[in-house]
Length: 104
Ligand code: AMP
Ligand code: ZN
Image (cartoon, rainbow, N blue to C red):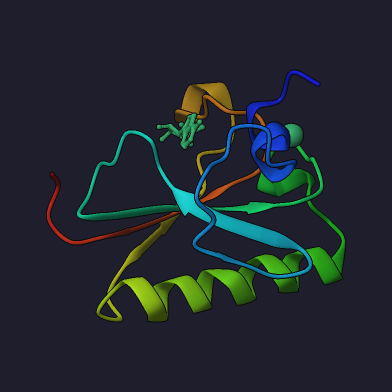
């Protein structure tokens, strides 16, 4: 298994999990670009948000985004999905960036 986020989901790296539900997990980005920079990642592998079509998974992913935003930001945040290499995606396991606060 060479997908870095699949390995994090499997607990291989001991990454601190900030929040989770049946469909997704959330952890801090290793290279934060804002005061709060959290990744929300579906447990099940898919390459980009465009490839994630299952309703239950989408609902679970966005429910966790809302939970993370309410717990770790002041309610104001940006939500970003880099989708495709040209658009800056470097890890090809779907993930949402939750960004809030000044760049660090
Ligand atoms: P993207 O450019 O949208 O594919 O974002 C991938 C993000 O994953 C980058 O912001 C990286 O800093 C982050 N990242 C890569 N490896 C790890 C890791 N082991 N733990 C946490 N974040 C990571
Ligand atoms: Zn994966």
